[in-house]
Image (cartoon, rainbow, N blue to C red; front, side):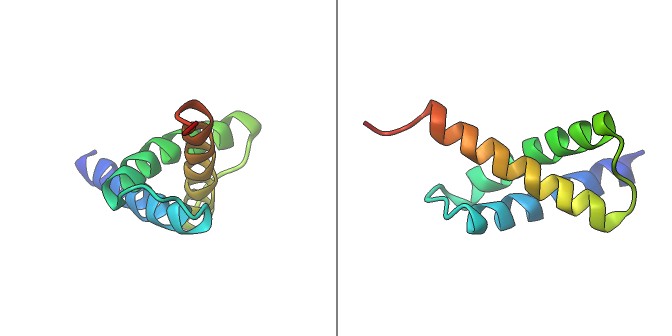
Length: 81
């Protein structure tokens, strides 16, 4: 159980970093990692909801997609005027 949580957090952190690079996020590395962990949860949930998932590669892809979505939503909500 602890192993699965640790792996999920590490995949989320890696995904947040990758999503930050893809989205050209100006946020800090820590913020991108936190958003990546949240995005990993969102991506995993969306993947299971629509019936895709399984395996390391798909988990990472879904996590990156979820993190990109979270960063996009973050920008919409906290947009500088």
